[in-house]
Length: 303
Image 1 (tube, rainbow, N blue to C red):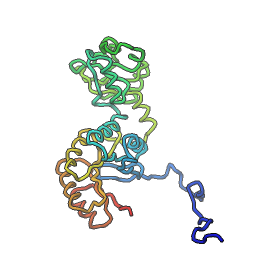
Image 2: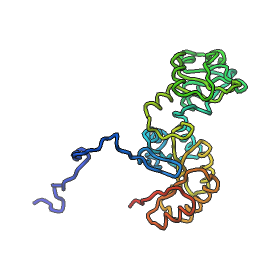
Image 3: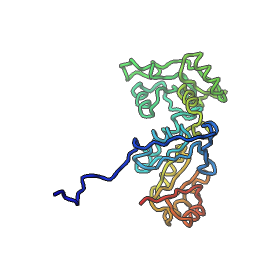
């Protein structure tokens, strides 16, 4: 006789492939739909999506993808402050109208040092600078077949790099890049000092992602989480130094003295930064955080 306490027939269960949403009649075209919203008083979103500040969800790669498609990624805090700041820096440097703080190298430095800089910053070229002025450019093409990594950058670099003055439009920059068959343009001021770098990759990415979330310098937007512990303010400082757009005081229970005190401290130290805190589940919690200085709150506490 079968054991009735262990039935052999399971109840019906469904997975994603078992469900289909049947489209209905509509008079609305996709081009007529606007799904943008406001994250804070200073930051709008093109799509109403923010990725979770979890170590299994958001680091630079996810944040870059989110920003390119009009949302925002929040880098998690489960790593040392310097590493979290490096993730923010990676997002900020992924694409921009002009890289205003390009990594540079001196002509006296070695190819070995140049390769280390390229590897660390995940870039393919370095402006070669002496006394603030570009004297050449070193790209992966220049060193592809070099075996003597002890020789100086000045021996291998491309001399007399193509430069343009600040204020050039991306369309004009694209024409210059095409004319000279190069991938990087050095931007200088009227005295010839290096101000920035424009790359083909950035221009093409901007054209491929017209709805990307960018700051006023043309860089992708990104958020980062902090906690309420002893290192919270030091962590916030290194993140702000790398250009983070949003700080999120991220805890399991946002309606607490520790969170409220942290919000006040961050707001006093960084009055211009967009600030979010949570998680909360009540109106009283929202009011308390608003009074403390947040621009937005995270609502919802899991089971």
